[in-house]
Image (cartoon, rainbow, N blue to C red; front, side, top):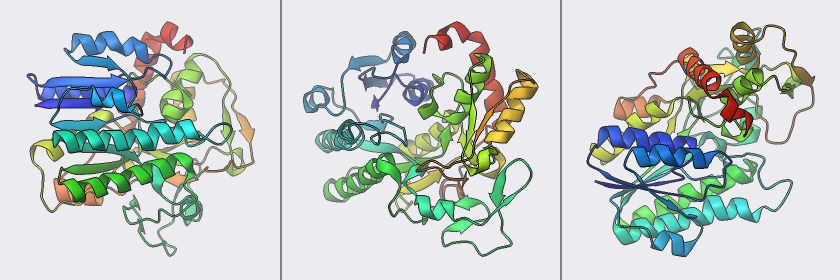
Length: 352
């Protein structure tokens, strides 16, 4: 087995390398990363200790991609994940990273006859649809009000793969959706396997704690560092909610997709924590007050920002029915894991 992991020095890339090494001790694992994310360089010793080959390069650079060794599978973890990217400044770097980079990855899969695991995002879904969900307030969080008519492709369990993907979905979401389309076209044209996993918020120990890497680690680290925090939008209540997914649960699906592919399985799957792992900012803040600082005050900004959504929970029924997959890591254990890591690496986190 020869595996290429793009974005290998990031949080998800490093975790995928760890789980790949555990699952396939004799595999050749190579990764590419441009180290653009502050703190990513600290993961290089971890990768070397796992006997992974690391190449400094950029997936949006054709020469860098063509210089990589031949592989059997590509796990694509490289992306600029910020939903606000490309709005305040030049949009081209975002498109270069997230879309042009995908094209060069697909060209490599074509040359090598390698399969592709594309880690995509729930942010491909229509912001208008998500902002018009029938919701109720349970006191600390928005939840779906199943007593009211639900839009097509929305269930009491959350958002399904059939949810609308019409604009606006943000420039970030558009680059990921376009990458999905390109991946499927390459699959149909050239025959190599493609699996697309649309993930909720990935969270766990080892995240660098920046806002674009996931709200859960960011919020906990801000508490540990005694830095300011704000509830933004929706009246400044913190009721907006997301589900969280541990990367180990994601890898368990990827392992099945590589080792035991189902010919007629859907190529696009929603992969997330589901109802049990959905948490609002207010609930996350309550966790931090209980475990870190009961007296910390959070600012309240009532106005919504473009691309904000009040609620996202993954309905992973299709993944469960097809692959028997469901998340095993519960939200409280994920938060405890992040908190423990943050306390043990506080001096490092201060530098990011």
